[in-house]
Amino acid sequence: MPPAPGEHRWRQATEIRDEWLGWALSTRPADRAAAEAAISQLYRLIGHDEPQFLWVDSPAAAMPVIPAPPRFRAGTTPAAEAHRPVAAKLADLMTALRGNLDDRTGRPWARIPWRREVWRDLRLEPDLADLVETAVRDSLRDTVRDSICTPLRLALETIAGHALGLAWHGQHDAYWIAHYDAWRRMGGVSFAAADAARLDLWATLARSCGWWWPGEELCVIAERPVSVRTEPVPGGAHGELRLHDPHGPAVRYADGWAVHAWHGTRVPVWVTSGPTVQRISGERNVEVRRCAIERIGWDTYVDQARLRLVATSPDPGNPGSDLRLYDLPEELWGLRARLLLAVNGSLERDGQRRRYGLSVPADLDDPIAAAGWTYGLSGEHYAQLVRRT
Amino acid sequence: MTVTLADLSDRTGLAVLDHLEREVTVPVINGPQAQGDLIVIPHHLVADEALLAHTTWTEVPAEGIELLRGATGGNPHTLVADPGTCQWTDDFWDSAMLAIGALRATAPVYLLHPEHGATGLTPGTYLIRRQREFDHRSRRQRIVAD
Image (cartoon, rainbow over all chains, first blue to last red; front, side):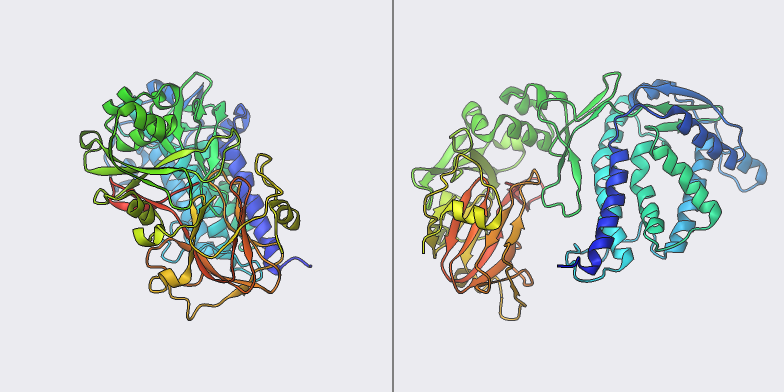
């Protein structure tokens, strides 16, 4: 069968995405020469001499050495303009570049996704813009910006004790660079030579270093992490990933600074290293609590936390297994909540049947009705379940 | 005609895990049944919630249709049918917002999963839904990942 007409374009978009995703996840030592040359060129574009460079092992290590920005007041006079901080001028430079590129594509990167559909039918020649936006832009925005860069930034803000100012993210800026790179490589558009050259500078940085903070005379640049652990996002149609490691840091830098994550949720180190019922009780963040419980397993948690059993009932279609409905302690969850503990119908590799806990609305008193609710069925219909595998 | 897990695995080229019994006949069932985080519901039970009267059906190809992949990206639930006996649609509204599609079959069809094994459906029209749980915090439902 000849390949469908859309398939070639699809593969091309996927390759471009994966190439940039690879740079965003790279754990190789920085290409210091390339990064310094690109940053020096950006400084020259805003009328500054190239800075001194200070390399650090992690974004956390950069916190104490980032030069304070000069005091300035926004003004309209040329003199005031000249005294704006380098970081602000670089932000303008980047914004102007992205504006120019958006003008060429006719589809701004930040367009409100009022119509977002997963494009699946390879028999149709897809509109290039839709293809770039779904397969490249949205995928990398979700993975690189929202699932990697943002958790790192939040972790960093807890160290810094305040919101971070203007920072650039090197490899983690790949999410927007890839979008424009896909447009030009897939033949959708040609950019003005000056804009293309500037895009190349940002692209070079995304391929060569970690986060960086431009000061007036000193630019602090962080190395890339030494390990990044991810998993595919469930139901992700375009290779989306999220941070996850059940046993250790999800992102780790050479100096030991690390961020832990459980299925995409940033968690304190204890969630992966030693979750206990006591620690879970003391945790104020309900998402962190849920992650910690999932880490030790709902069944273990139910046993150890001595949850109050509301009702139990044989699971229809799953002979020999019970459905058990528990109250979750209101003081722990902050509201009335119930947990349905069910048993898988098929054996695991180790010959065990896995138990799993599902939250259900607190007004359900009957385990059968609760199990039915999880499938949008009445208890009466769920009771007719013939088989569970 | 009886079908075993080994038959389905051979027919589709989809592997199943070694600990599952490969030579046992796969039961063919006409009631609701669950496979992991999916449930198969005879359409007449939920006819008021999922209207299929005006949907467009497509033939299920010989290699089957992958309905859903597991949380780790592998382990798909695959719908397997003899050519010409089964049609599929996901072009309809399910008021529970859980349906991933519906099928109508004129011969037995099968759902195959590397970990959960296989299960058969008698001819008829079925809705396939995912499982949800209640997020007490946001007071909204969220989909369960297998």
